[in-house]
Image: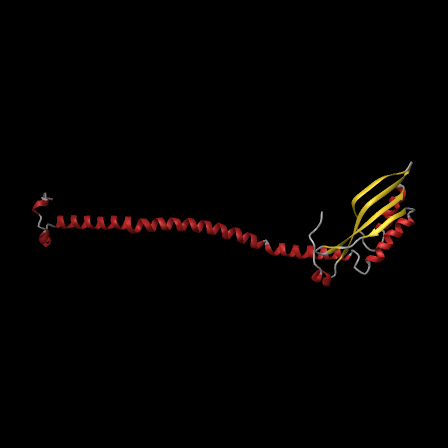
Length: 208
């Protein structure tokens, strides 16, 4: 290939250029076009493709996570339904509104039958919760350990489930007789609310 002096090239007569020069110019122009395309088109598209691939990976991971959670949703729903049924069954074992007055009388009667002296047995106003009503009873009872044990056993054997929680209850000797005890304070009993009560009653926040 002969040497070509660029100063001798007539750019207006490119049709008469030697083949080597034509090929060289075409190659240079093609390379320049590719270079410009790389910087202004391909490079941006490549960066966008990398970003989209990263987004795809994140979205795929999020989808797989949600899919795993969704696959466990149905068993959880079934467990929730079972737990609600169990809760309703347990609540139904508590006394109803109509049974509550007689039940309070039965509790008081159990104390008397156990030999305990009821110096104070005063039911207070109910407090409504979400599914049940809470009724406090102020008490002051006098008896011995055996009598109190008999009383608790008798309450537990009543036909309806009776839940009694001790609130501010004190148990101390009564007078000089060391065997005689005085139990005073507040116990709480509970009953379930029927559907109409749950829908109509203004509910209060749960207490301690």
